[in-house]
Length: 101
Image 1 (cartoon, rainbow, N blue to C red):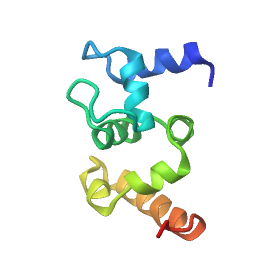
Image 2 (cartoon, rainbow, N blue to C red; image 1 turned 45 degrees about the horizontal axis):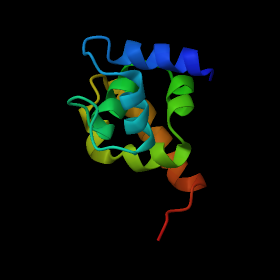
Image 3 (tube, rainbow, N blue to C red; image 1 turned 90 degrees about the vertical axis):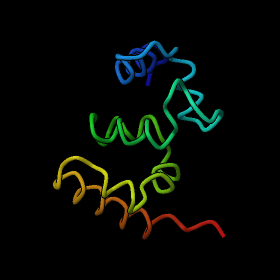
Image 4 (cartoon, rainbow, N blue to C red; image 1 turned 180 degrees about the vertical axis):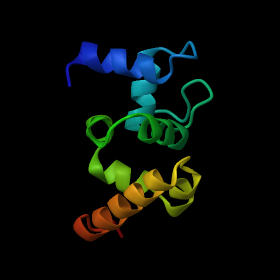
């Protein structure tokens, strides 16, 4: 993803808060604990609920998705169809990505 496109997307994600795109990017990469009031998990949930899978995997690695996509988070998704879809994604990622020991 082009940097300008990515920055525009990051600003759209947090359109209702004055958080610099670079702070959001640091949070996505796990380089800081918070960007504004968002934790990495909160931001991941917001992105999953608002954007396509294609966008999710452009912003997060599959390893990050596997770590962030917990049963607890899936239960918090607004729609049953999203819970079902990401429950399937979670199971598939567990099958294809070895768990670090």
